Length: 294
Image (cartoon, rainbow, N blue to C red):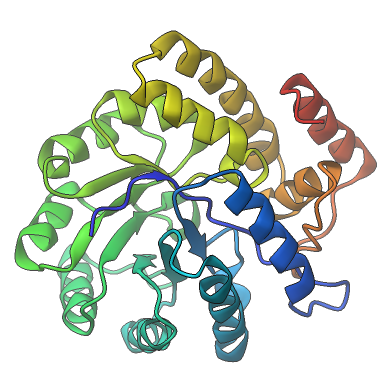
């Protein structure tokens, strides 16, 4: 399966005690679906997937799959330092009838290239679900070697592509050269959404699409319609939003603050994350005002 378009890696709203707030999640899902996004990535980085236990993951994934009702693809994020635990998370997600997996590399203990290759081979052999690799050096401390990605792509029929979150245009270009004709290459950061599309990529799983889905969808639609100037105008706004909300502060707290400022129940981020300070909240507010989102 080839994943395309704008796929928000949506937040998981928590109440003040840290419990999953399903009522708020339902309202947020209406917001994203009404914005005509092309898919949803659940329990991934911005969904605080690594902070969810097995039962919470089940509840959140089931809620999203049930709400979407097959209208758009649902991709489940999986993450663990342990190959065995990753496989268990995938098995759970498959039972919940997701459409694909977003696979975070092993972290904490940095694997060698040989170990990483065997990890991916073992995981991809364990399931028939389409699997997107997730290159996210910001969180795991290293890049997946490009030559390894090409090798996995050729070996496994359920390899579906990659979410590239390094922000490095040269990596995006090279991945599209190697994978682009057969597999998805998706921007992983909002500042390179248009460059990824212009180079031949398929869309993005980007944090700015959580609180500005209408802008990201409009950029995608304008690009597909051949309006590069219109798409570039939006990209400049998205780059500013990405710099302030996603990169400048704790992105979990800042993204949820952006949703709150838009009148949506983003909820709280789980500890050890803390709410933004008044100065930080004002900075996020100014960015949303500049983008005409509030």
